[in-house]
Image (tube, rainbow, N blue to C red; front, side, top):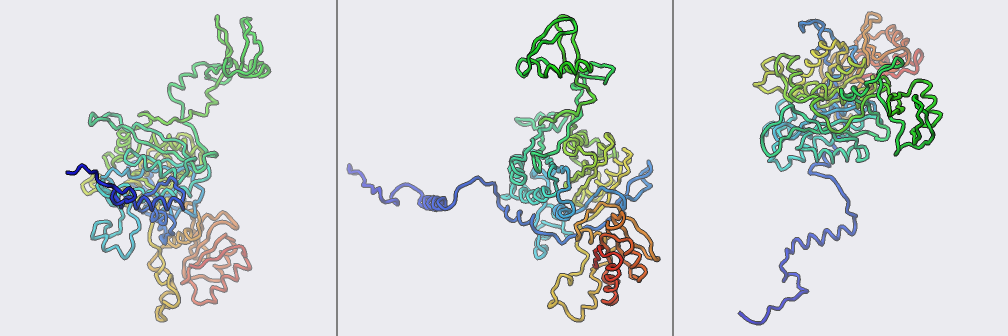
Length: 600
């Protein structure tokens, strides 16, 4: 060992005890910072792909299911009434990403309220896996990502490196599409628990904007408190966001029992009332003497002017106390109450998971669904988010159909006419479940049956129109260019339809293509011995009239033209030659020039 200290060259970086690779990364970071300002950003692996997933249009369509669109007419749940033609409620089966895309143009800015109860990402439940390309299907099936029918639910294990990312990528495009549907005064409610509460808040801030945050409701979800672990988790959360907070249209809740007890006074003028202060030393701005009924003189400060005080007293709108402490109070009548402003902590009086399970069990007489939401909770949310009695409420994670049930319940109580649009995947019920034992193969079957049974119990006859997300009915050759088609196949493609589609199937292809709403009234009529469909037809220059038969005569064409619909639709295979099509167009030009004629 030497007494001479080691010489250190301070200008030689390599001689220092530092990580040179880290130092080089820091140099690059600072170099980039010179060119780009640093800013806060919420991102995850797969965000860009999720963004483009929302922006990518779908080639899917909606296929009517009249056989599923019934409600019960008897107490034995056997006699059925089909509500497909008349109902304004929609029940959509299929991947909700496609369902949202198919709703985009038809319901853009028309939805008053959205409520969703998405997968909580507990590590045990399932999330949608998006972006399955047809070339990957065999691999996906082999790996268990999808089954032979293309079902897209996958288990999201907590030990996965993309545990949070996969959930966010699933939610992001759906929330972006959902926002488009909301009216400017609309509102969305999203249920969640601790697993993704923090990430969901950031995601909602990004999609809806921090300025449109309304509230985070903490709801006690359980009647019991488990005596396990260090903390008993008894709460879930409901995020509330507006499309445009300054003009959001929120309702109020019914007064609580304690609030109703405050209306303990009564007069013959308008019934029950409570007292409201008029003399206030901190908020009163008017000073003048007031003589009580007993002759005492009181001075302000009063919260109203002297003239206003006199007018109210003459109309009997002031309540005078007796005895030594004579005071005037404003009468606040129960009949004038608009309800209670909601707060952000909801206890078990709004319902619990246990009570929600019993609600479903009482309808089916067995437990066919796990973890539904209570009707009382959702009914309260709908009272806030959809106070207008003709509002449209959407739920695209419909589960057991709790939102539809709650809409019907609230309509019964306040004589409303709210409509629901709900969507759920035809996810298989577990093999050994009570649902399977009862004959329900998929979740959408349970959901529709719950709506039917709840409607029967409530006396609700509004029904629903069942639709299913399906592949387009057009042949693949329709999407090919002229150079890709072979001469010998041209004759086979006169009819564009790939398979045997019903008239209603063809009608909904037209509605989807034309961005028309899907829940308008349908009627069938016979003209010149041929059946035609009238959709939302209320007279001249309204609705759609469709003829999908093969016997389009001049007489039938003229009779349809005389009805002067907004849109007239015919099938390509109806026309034997081009001159027939020209003849139809000419007749409409003469009889109903404002009608748009379509051929599919």
